[in-house]
Length: 468
Figure 1 (cartoon, rainbow, N blue to C red):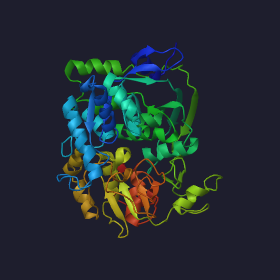
Figure 2: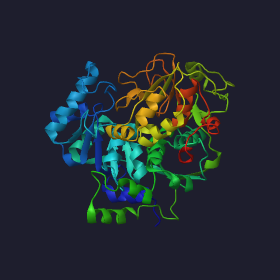
Figure 3: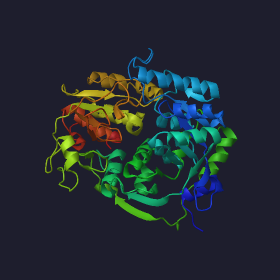
Figure 4: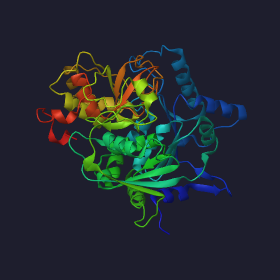
């Protein structure tokens, strides 16, 4: 019987089938952070349990941490306490922890792949919805709740019902000025913020195969923003080249053995899906959101649509139907998060602003997703380029993506954000978030208003290899 890649991974991880119920699924990798793990460890303590397999759990602090002065004690008590608890819990249970200042510290969904902890054909969970990021390597990866975090810590398994499967094929080359963030926003806008509810997505097609691993991670990261359980992409030579030689990746003969296994992780040609959608990537344009969910998105050159049921969202955003977003003055620009906080995002942004200056009215927060990304930025001289253009780099963390730390957008202010969610108050009480990719963010930071990055290419000195 023909099988999808999801079928193959799922079936190889089922420990037990419960009649008329969920499956007991074995978990290969468990990532934890300071927000959703304290209560789970408290639950273990109450029940007198230990972590069953600590070597398969990895921890970092990212959500609550400040992005300035990380060498100093965290000032905010509500942020400092959970970080201190994470350090104590991981030390007690023998879990590998990457604390602030550690060369491997950063946002959980960025450091997993960077360190080679994330590999292929795995089941991966974390108490964070954007765990779907790790699906870019051909994994069943999804977010879980705090009670489920406790269950994985105690048993290395999880009760799960098998979701339906959706194939999304994207074919054709992305145009200049268009990046993977624009592609996934285009897909979400087409299918709706609930279009993937009840499904696990598989992304395929010539466009997906042409993407780098960091671009693929952006695609899978945003898959849950259309209601899906997660998203994955079959591994290939691009995947293997990325993973080879990383600290936790297999080495020597073991590497060769694993690559041989991973090479078989693809859907059979005649595999059947519950739903199939196809997209022409040549039609994708730079995208921006106008409402309060990622599905409310349009091309940067389009006007806000008039749709029944979106009145409340437009009122919150201070926008109206028929209004052009291009040219709308912006207060804050945020580059970072587990969606667009990797080195390729900073390369794109930096090369775009080369020779320009940040608009005086713009407050720009450029937050690398990890210490490793910071190191690469400095090694490549991007920090100097950005400084010349009037930008300041911060230290790693989730930052303004979710407003759980000091980096909050003030009420009523507009933030052009390269993050993943534009919900009401997501970046701070009353903040107005407009999602976009790193190129739109760069163009906006230079002009002070929402701008189409394609209009700069004819006169800019951006190398051809970066014009995407």
